Image 1 (cartoon, rainbow, N blue to C red):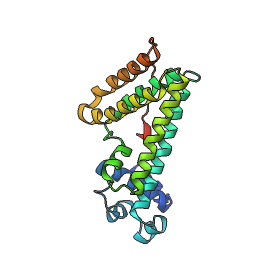
Image 2 (cartoon, rainbow, N blue to C red):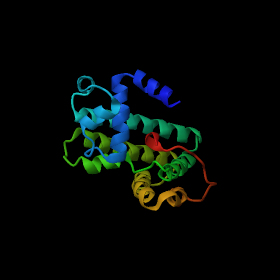
Image 3 (tube, rainbow, N blue to C red):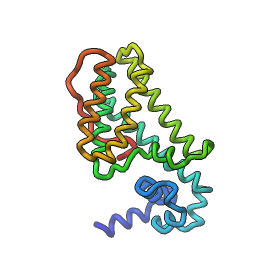
Length: 210
């Protein structure tokens, strides 16, 4: 099985091999901590081949974040599709799923938050990419809150995003016990803003492919 997996990996295009390796290393060890030479060594791709696909490390970081963005959008669609026509349940479902993600043994934080913290230069392209994703999440939460009938959808969306950001830290410091509390806190915020309470929703599988 190991030999088959290695053979399958070797058949991937060089760009995908580099991106797969970079994604794993950037997420686990940090963007700043991982150099191009390490990625080349781990991926088995020649340096010339890497630079043929990615002109710089900044370009590779942006490709990594763009891939995560697509995974985040796919996660969002999976969770909300479980509750068609019910934005209130969709909002709650996002936090149930988020709770499962932060409780996962492989969870080491939000990759977009990590990129923002690591890439401090205001004009860094990776930082700008990550900040854009955060803004998009806030906008999506605001739309769902409005569809659910919130009197102040922007206010609820901001509260929910702040909870999300806190959840990433709680998952790292508190471990699996943080998961149910995150789901409960999300439901409480939604119910307080919208009035009343509904049964808890369930949705597994975290954002950004984690």
